[in-house]
Image 1 (cartoon, rainbow, N blue to C red):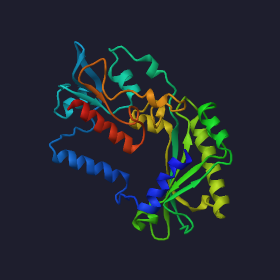
Image 2 (tube, one colour):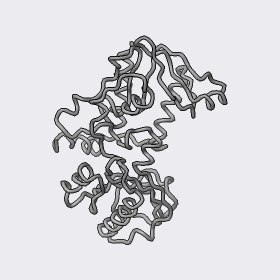
Image 3 (cartoon, helix red, strand yellow):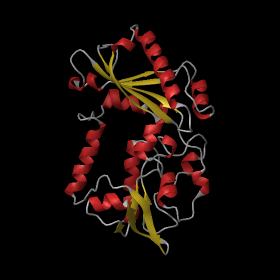
Image 4 (cartoon, rainbow, N blue to C red):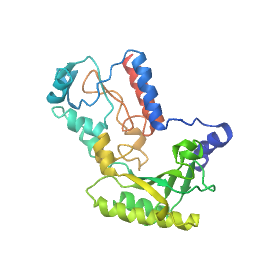
Length: 294
């Protein structure tokens, strides 16, 4: 694994990688513009309540009646094909309640989540770069906390991203924009307010020690993204980032297919199905699904 993972720094330092000037959301905007140029119509803020099926095949989707009416849309939209980008577990649980559920898939342990602090910092740190990782002193204990104890370790591995290193306009003059992320367990009903408070304290202490500067007074503004919010915003099962966990040697072979073997005309894309999590693989899942349709 170490040699394989060295492909990443090799790409960045020896070959070079692209930096999205408008942030990661700029990629989303570009994909939307490309789709619209090909004739795709987007209907925003229209919650899908059910994938409609009859006689073993999908026939369309059912929307929230009130919001559909307000937008001048019918409650039920007929379609020959339906593609779900929702976490596959919640696709079955929420959108296919009348269909037989794949219990083995739904009951698999979920992957880890993330806790992210967005900090505006009133100082520049020339010793830091775009990507910075500060590892835990006990990696095994960290993952024991995540997957067995469903909590956060006191000494987490911290990933710090600072886009203002490459695009100064992302932060005010003399400051930096810090994206501070630690691994977190998926949402299993923990006391997240207490966990977040402790994590913030531990992260600030760790970064202050390693950088030789008290970071807490330098935090000018803050926003927080935790597993609860990830779950509510993205419909991911328990706020898991990668769908079902990949903690055993068979996990890669247990990913849900991009095509339903129970309902004709139903396809799945995104990080919770084949081939896996992360933006490149999620896009690849869409390419695979398109190939299946064609």
